[in-house]
Image 1 (cartoon, rainbow, N blue to C red):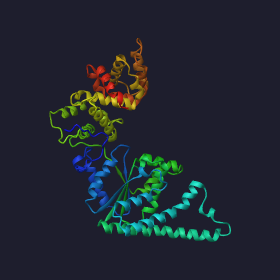
Image 2: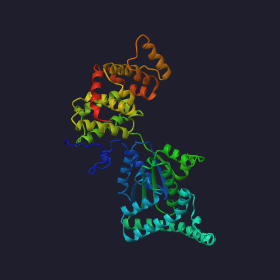
Image 3: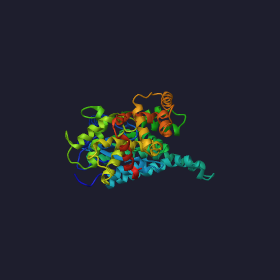
Image 4: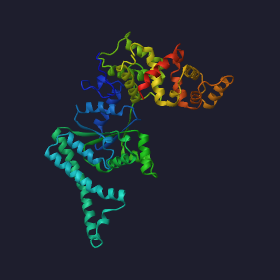
Length: 444
């Protein structure tokens, strides 16, 4: 193992294929998605739906790797990079032209499309942003004559867009020897609502041109996309609007494990940890990393919950753990039993910072332990939890009002404690929680 760690790097190692480094066990779903893309009739728009951090970008990486071996020409377009553009179609076409054989014939065709699209969208853009249409620039004496000529030219440009786009794609495929273009539009749900809707409209109008062998794959948080549509068009049904654009909806799978699905989260955690430590070999039964994996079984439920049942959130915690190791502050392999405690402390600091900052002395840490223990049998009703705790504290003061209130009134905090209920069995938990808090002094 090298002393040089990988911190904040979540990309597939160049020397490995996706199948070799499938920490989320998405290979089955990936094969299904690839078969879908290969078999559809073009042009077609596919929606790959999944919440933030569910692994959509990772899935795209795996799909592209295989499609490039097939008869597909691919482009991954990061919409977030162009979030300040009013129209994303122009940079998308430029990216497609730039990445695949920028030869004169293809380049000329791409430039014609860009010019045509720019002209065709100019009138709507001016009207939307300034309230002034192109006709307002025409003098009264020439308004009708020139206006007619303008709209005639506008109509010609729209037709020209379709012709040039067909020619552009045909030239591109001919020069690359491929049969189909697959364009992945990623990170769209990170953009502002207007940008999201603009691109959806562009896909619907400009790119879904007949006889063009293109598949467009939009990676989206479906609920956020519907909210963006409602923000732009309050009177529209956002779900119906999206259905008219997306012909095939696909859904991101949950992380799976080759043995048991219940172990998927901690399996992913361990693979990302091993990647961060630059291990060349997987752990085997009986070694220290296997011991860490077994220790994490005590808090396995937390990997399936809202706060940690998400690949990107696991990634964030692993990065913090590797950062502590690289700084020689904490060594997971010397203290495998403390990894769960450290995960608890990191999540507590991230999602319940007021509670975390209230932990000052031994009494606070002891009371936190009491609340972890109480969550095992605690009522799911906040009202009953408050009654229960007030009854227990009737003849004594509550050591920490902040923890008390969070336990009684914050459902997420209560379920968080319940997910870590096994920690209450640790004899010196208070001291180890206090030590973990000291580890995190320099990490936000």
